[in-house]
Image (cartoon, rainbow, N blue to C red; front, side, top):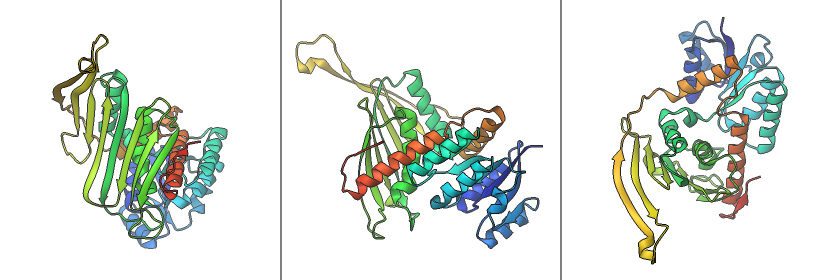
Length: 336
């Protein structure tokens, strides 16, 4: 018998999450809840053994369920996750974990108090290409990382309640934390709303770290191109990850500027270095499948998830600070 799972929320992305958990050998998916009865009927036709309900409380209060997957709209994440943790259930919650750091702290404390796993759906932390970039960093091949910048833009999907920052930036913030460290100090963010008053369609955020490292993020759902790109600049080498590439997702550039210790003039101090470009062969697997398996393994092995509640809370704190800066026309905001 496997772990008893249930899921709240079965929308477009929720269907993919459900499929991956359902297909894991260690999981018995008992029930799914959603407000849309049509979606539930369609799921029931394909998965007749799974109970369906429009009442999420039947899942949250069911003592037979070991873990709850929450894939609802962000404004409901906190309340569903809180009830699940209070009812002694492990929780997988989609990003962002919550919409306020105060409520995020409550979830982290509940999970610790009840010795439960709380994992956030920061899917790129399980993506083989992004993990390859981290491996370059950890091995020292990049040297000291100086800064990174990412672009996540497309035409749509336009949200009605959350701006492009909250909708898109959690992905890139989680990667910036994975690569640069967990304690950024301040953020500056600018952007604009064109389609709906008060809901920014485009945002540019600069996240500063105490050690002088920086992460620049560009997100938009109002752009002619679909771009998912990350560039990391190190003291030895530089790497570019293009997630829209089907086969050659990563290019490692042996490029840099070397500083000579003994020199007589400024022109002698700096040497530009342009070397080879290496394209590594990646063994690609579905990141969502790897993410779901990681959550299950963390429960079975009693190990902390990579994207745990602390990780989710840090992302929310940065989003909060960036949103405050955005609303104040780019005023720098300290990250508490």
